[in-house]
Length: 510
Image (cartoon, rainbow, N blue to C red; front, side):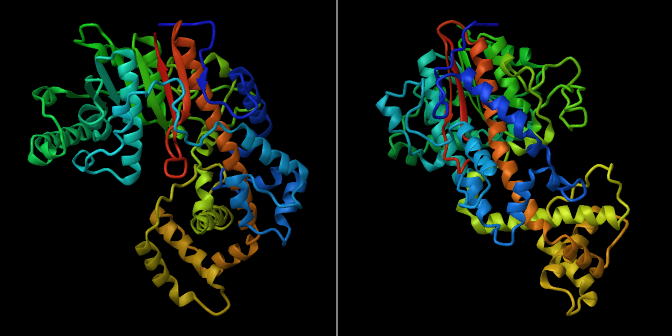
């Protein structure tokens, strides 16, 4: 294990006005103490738990005013735009949340990483035969990340690159055959043998194409060593198996020089990759985390968080958060981690879709309220998970309820009735409300659409703050274990609208 008394974070991009990660971390913690309650609100029990009343009174009055347009929430959450009549305390909140967000705008420069190699800079167009099965989003991410990983591998002289959570091997193959000036061998690791076998089949297909005339016409130089450049391994990885992962990564390397990488490693897998770097002699790590809602914490029985739901870490295991000593006293909980997964920057690019999301969330919260008031569901019961309701589900529910539709019901009344009956059928719940019951509930709580949308927007801004806490915690952890002369970076690598989880963590040992 490597340690350093001084945090090596000169390559971590910070918001304007902050020149120290310690000062920034303190500001994040203070803001979370003030506004973290917003992230703890759950949309499903919004009406049952009376979340609206937890807001400051002047915020309630502002959003409840009939002149307030719900569409204004999109600009507020996406671009910090507030109307002239907004309460000063609300304006301050919005401005503070945006000022504290970890910078998520993609820049050409890669802080702390040498990408001066001109050949690599020009390697932006990867031949299509490397990209089978990739979506345009995945394609863009793999191109950007593979260039960065290859640069780090060259800088640190790594003989092996371990792609952890490799899945179908998209990133692995591009690193092995396209962005491959490091000449490092690739170790693709995944916990799912089906994914590993799928990656092997893709690899076989790719190798056949690389030997073919099209690859030669494109200037690809075949080398027999390419057939053995990628090795696949199936291994379960969690916070308790990081030692075994480190041993696997350096196995049979003459000088033991290896690095770790991962694209959208889910939840604690990201934490485990970073812990492996900290505990081993890995030369570097390049990681884009994802799925914060699957991060574990340790339970803390205090008055402030005793009732907060959390993903409990295994007994005796280090939790996925916090990793660093910098945030050792911070507790988030499951709802806060879910809030960190929000993607408010996307809202203004799809205003219609965002408004429809508000409506769907309203219907889900309304269904829970109806199940509690009329359907016998206990307020202490675990939230039923409805999942996706298909057009077929809705059509079936509409057909079954058609005889109850009369002119006294509005189209919105009917839409909610159809949704509620379809959702309850999907849950196999032993109660079916009448259309009249659904309509009464909808009319009684109609004002709640604007309220719930307002809380959802406010919550999304706290979510960005929580993501910032997670990023800084992980960067600080890498700094604590990088060793003298090492470098640590954290910066936006992808477009935040296309790829909401666009922050990459980079650490290199001397």
